[in-house]
Image (cartoon, rainbow, N blue to C red; front, side, top):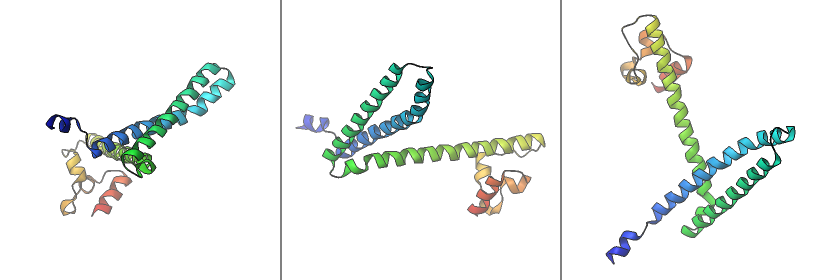
Length: 159
């Protein structure tokens, strides 16, 4: 009996696996959708052959089948999951992208502050902690008078 229990996979683990598959499918669908118009233009202009377009259409059909399979498996696992598995996957991807963009903006703002301080030969070097520190109302922007309007808005909104 212990052997059977060790091989059993929990429902939450199966749900997570299906959400991961759905997420991968969403990424593939967005990639195919993004590239479809360019591919059609290239085929129309004669730059590439129709065979490549047929391969592309086959990949689209394969993806549609995979997505239907994921939806069916999700529905069999938990009633109603088939209806929301791709919605959750899309939201996860959107949240990840927003986080990446916020991190990139912060990195660029730190880089700008570093360049400003380097240019003005200031002893105070900006760090992520100093940029994000809003305790006692003191920020690197107030110390140096530098920074982007985005950072100034962020600092004023956080106080």
